[in-house]
Image 1 (cartoon, rainbow, N blue to C red):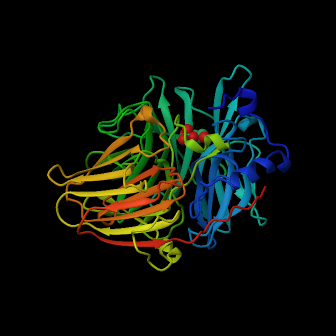
Image 2 (spheres, rainbow, N blue to C red):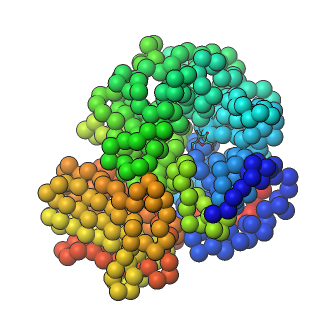
Image 3 (cartoon, rainbow, N blue to C red):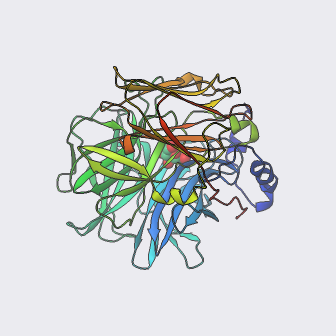
Length: 485
Ligand code: FRU
């Protein structure tokens, strides 16, 4: 693993020529994704500024141009007509002013009238590395470029720790007001959300208070990337609690969970109907954010970072890392989220192929699972051994995913085996495989599991236990990998 000095990690990009060679090398990697958004060079992490605006989907990602390292963060901007075909649109936000001198950190977007507004965290650090987070804004211009507002909307609350970031802006029609939800940490290091409100998007913001979430007063040390949405009359609060272990999640201290309940904007209280749920049961799923302006009261569209903070992935050797998840539709049924891949992915399907040859690099598998125990192995060697293994134990109503059999092992410290509880049994699986990722949807979206996987050329086999109906479609590429600065 390469050691980076602070100077190297926080170097400011001055010209496209500084990363062209890195781009050429990155593009040649065998692990470049075919239908997932990925960093042009360097590292991508959280999705940012996700919104539908005048018929185009806009998405940015946290981007460190220099390599597979979390350093100075930019926003890199991509656009799509359909959530599947993405074009690089160039740098979205550059950390080039006092307020964001050490990074343009995560945030959201909202379309209003003719304009698309972006809200992000300016990560300011002074000489002795003391951090001051500012909530800043930018507006999309006719040239498809983001223009930053010269002054922040507001600074941090002094009674909380330095961890105050990731503004999620929402419009509340009853109140006729905007609200910004900020991921934060109290002075005694408990995760929480701070709420600001205004009648205008670019001015008038005042601190409304801390979000109360009864039962969740001590739940992790920082709540990153909060997102709130109303789906079919239910409020859904999604966030990424960190600095804590949760039952059944191995040694990982980074999670992405959701609560379903009711948000009261008068008392700033989110009352959960029940316990928290994992948004995804996989190894690598974090900082999920829903798109603004979807315009359908019964669904949300969500995208996440396939990866976790403090983890390292094999393409680090090639100086790049990261991928966005497939966008997914969220619905609410029986007090739970139901998550399904966006239908547009089906347009990438080629003619089905027999599931007995090598797995294509980009493909979709649909498996109808017979009753009883079940086994599925992806990326096995020619002799049928190894791979990413799935074992469903019907008596225990539990599926176990094990990535120890892959030749390229990584992040052993967080654990390489995880369970998915499936109280209603296992009936079907949809698996979306791309060059370095696998996304599994169980029982038409009742639970999901996302992981990176870096199979070698010798690991392309598939094994399915008897009696299952299997359909395998190759998927066409849908992201372009052009150099756009
Ligand atoms: C989540 C996060 C955010 C922050 C960003 C910085 O992964 O830590 O809280 O804004 O990444 O890249």
